[in-house]
Image 1 (cartoon, one colour):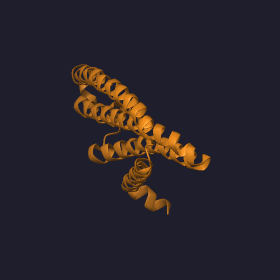
Image 2 (cartoon, one colour):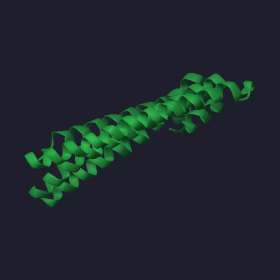
Image 3 (cartoon, helix red, strand yellow):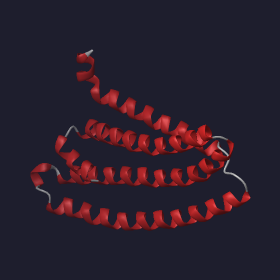
Image 4 (cartoon, rainbow, N blue to C red):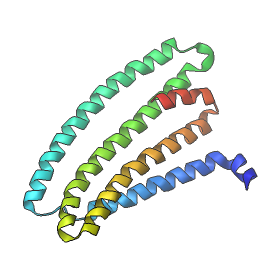
Length: 169
């Protein structure tokens, strides 16, 4: 068993990451299929969603500019004997995965809020399931994307130094 893990650890990590992302997708489907409540609840949720979208769009723009600056800094100032292009590519992959997980997590949290509130009108158990599953989506996205990006990036580059950029992103 240890030999299989040693020889195929990267492939196993990629498969486990994909399973985690699939589980996040299934939990997202559960949250999304839950009722968003009555008309007034949907109105309040729409206002919260509009504010969250504005915040997320601003965050994406700001982080994109900062990521571009850091990427250029890595390309021009990272020691040339440590593959600065691979480190910069790793940084971009890490930044995109971080931003994607944060963006999706915020969207799911906003979606889950109104559904949890309406679920509470049915039962405490229903509300807890929706809230827990909504939070689990974000957790699984962060872990799944982290594991997938690290293992897939290393699988492609075979350069442990380039993982520095990925971790920074």
